Image 1 (cartoon, rainbow, N blue to C red):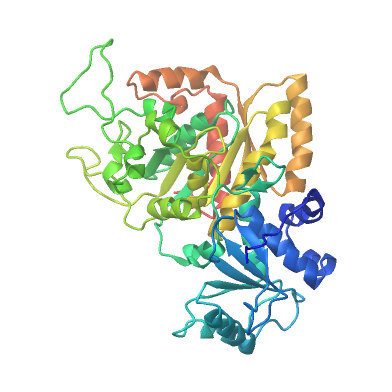
Image 2 (cartoon, rainbow, N blue to C red):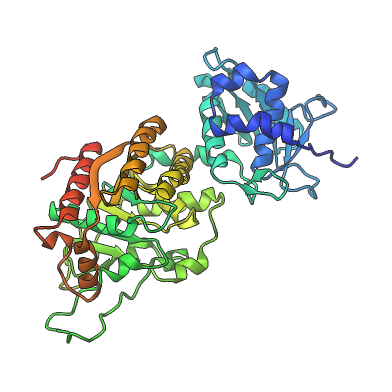
Length: 476
């Protein structure tokens, strides 16, 4: 008998999308009946790229004894996974070991297909323990907190399918919830990612100058360029060999290794790609325009996203050991990442690794209206990793105009409501920034902090101090 896949309507979308937009197990339990919860989970997995079959009425021994079968696509005949839905009160006693054993028996009878027991409540400690036993390898337990993380990640990882529904491009199971990412050993360096989906808001400038401000405090810094425009890379040329002096018009030497090699078919470890710069405390993972050509887009790729975050957080990541330059290898204190101006794969994987996400924006109507996209990406990646992450909004390129003041007033109201701190520092428009960029690109050593009269330099110091305070880091 052909598989009868569930069909979803725009009434389902209207009913269920609010629970994906602002997920809450209390609200789901209060507003959805047990049968509606089954259909809601079917809708969630439909959004996760699966074809879904409703089989709750097919009971053991003549049927699978679960609520849903998931298929990778509508042409498959064998289920990819099975789902059992349990809508219980979040504050209730939860699910115990007997229910887990019963579910494991159903899975074994049904052909050893991986199964997910999903609840709005929680599992007893002994239930979590028994799934470690031999013969329980196909059992996955998804409690209310895990379900919320899964939904948050899906919500920010979908694209329109042409029928008015938003779905991931490939089927995404919640197995990454069990990766243990947040508990894994990691570098002692704090990772600050500068991100905004909108261009022209000062991301590269902010990454560069926060890096310089941290270096001035005696910190060892790794700057990471993940933007195919490679503007950050152009401001940090490699050091000259001892005794070599370039004429004024001579082209600057270029970096020889690029972060694109980490994403090649035979990936190079990040450690091999770290380059020294002319500023001894600052090292660089350089970019080139190949990043634009290999970007697979911003849809869900949890395995790849977590893999890069692990690489950037690796405990052994340290400075280059090029003879005569940065010759003493040691760990970094801070890793500062510049990202592309889009919801791209490279922005997502950088944010996944972050301890702190700095979102620069201009106080204008377009930037204020667009910050929701940047904030949604940070929410999505925090759901993926389950790791703590601080965030702050930094107003940049400030001019004291009537329109900017009006936009800023709106921003100061919206930011607290959305739960995103607005830094006190405000980076003014300052021509010293552009002068510094030109000097750096031409091989000079004078950055924006080289001008005593630079208001932008003062505010970047203030912003850096605010970030240090937020992260609980004492200045030297």
